[in-house]
Amino acid sequence: MLTATEMRFCATCQRDTNHIVVLVDKSYGKQVKPEQRRKEFFKDFVTGWAAGPFLANMDRFARHSICENCGTKVIDE
Image (cartoon, rainbow, N blue to C red; front, side, top):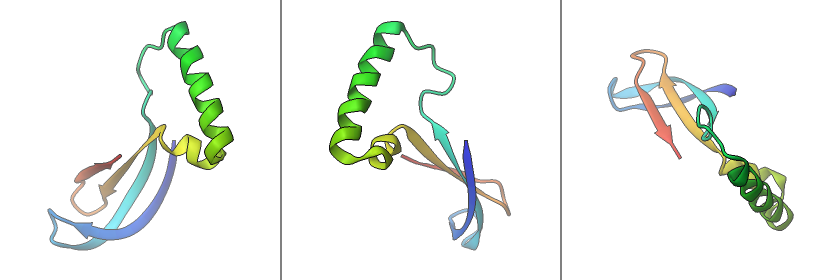
């Protein structure tokens, strides 16, 4: 889990506030079968070869922004 902070507009507060940004693995908490694991490996291998390792891993994460003022959470996928 990676975290950072940024200024962004909060719809609840109606102003720019500090937000904590957390990158969460989309497969976190899911039960993965061995067949799915192999399929994901080959998919990631081909994507990493074609687009590079950074872009290959970006589709594995969901971006969660949490307002420090009111606690509103927004998920950007």
